[in-house]
Length: 618
Image (cartoon, rainbow, N blue to C red; front, side, top):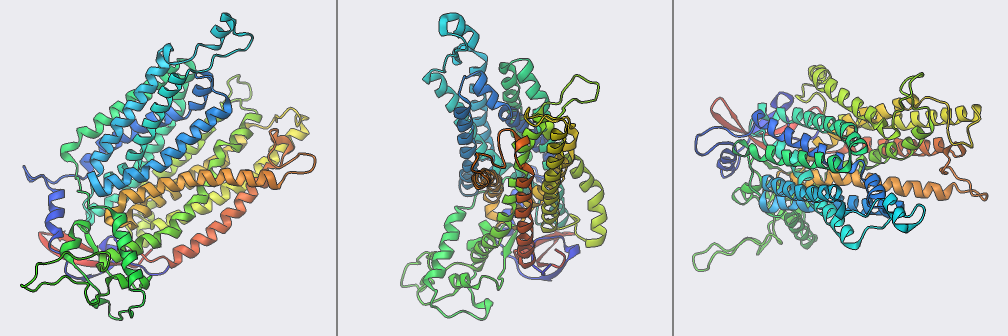
């Protein structure tokens, strides 16, 4: 790939000395040290608190959301369409609130207080939902009771407006809580490793692997144990367990307060980006400066947003350099006869701020490439689930126990967990010997591997579906909507999606955190979650288009209710073709990508030195 510049270990880079803003050095030291006892904050000792919080939170959230459709239809007596719409609206709101939470963390109150406050809000929402599930007054009477009261055969009492209001308030509180928690916890965990030290910075990449491992392990427990409690013990306990786990997560997180590195917010990043864009447009007719050294820099002003390194000039996207081009009237007067005026950042920006905008613009194409991978993997919860429901789901040939169709995602999670463990323990050390990179391979290579495996997963799914449909025809069960084929035929596609997620999602998360400007890392993590949401919406749009496009004059189409009469394999291969095109697009973007240039401040053997790191191996 093309040579770029980035923040990476000195063992893999060519380093040249350069001065670092002195104002940034005390701020970084203050964030890293305990003022009372002089003990260094952050590091590996904070990980048990953060991981315990993540495990408990995921147990709560996934245990709450996995079976919620069943709760709304069976306990609240909602029609299926209304229940699905309610959860869709909840999901859409949850997808947008992380942008608000990220803004609060980056611009106003910092990541720790955003996470703590959002977790408390989440706790209130889950407690309210648990109370409504445990106390019969908050739910309509069971259908049998309605029938005994004269409601007629099959009559079910509808939920009263105030009962629905309690439900909607609890869902809204959960969406708000998710908005503050999701974009901040990953960035806050990575903040615990001091980027001013090479050894600490190298540990960040291991953190992303183990964060995602804990995430997947807790989801695995939630979709098995918690769902079992909901179905077989009761909804009071089934929602009470996740609510209790949420409470544990809050306590675990707050318990580590004295040891955390807590970085102060540095003002609105969106305002800074807008200021650069406006200043560049204003000076669009100003001649371009050939010497980058003549562009405006102000280390004192940029110190709060460059604690661990200042961004230096890159030649790409040179139009925005005009924002740092000094023209008459840009600089405030400093003569003794007039009072000093503040710098108008809507007319003149520093090189660091210009490079912040350039970094965000360069990240856009790579970020967008991850959306279609989510579109492909989301089929596990729709058509793959429908495939499983038609197949022989006995756990063994002579067993009466059947694997629930919805539990097939367990194979995805297991494959992801195994891949993450093998990647961290075996693949990274092997790759490190060849590449010299502390993290084994770059996040762009890691995403590329995930994209490729995702293509294979969709391709395999098409062939398995064709075999499943042929087995149904051979067994004479086409019209019955079933097939004698074992459900284990679906394991390869589920497992491949899990392996792809281990490479792509973690690589995507690493990319968003590392390449985002230092002051926008919560926002970058929110964009990662937004890409997941957009991938689901694209899946819905694609299904709608295929359903209409494939409709025949007799009412047939590729995706009928009885998939034995459809062409689901064709749909999978359409997804495969789109992914191949997306992979080509991604490879082009990755090859042309320029890593953000960071001038790091290093502390080695008691001596301070500054360096601009040029990444040779990407």
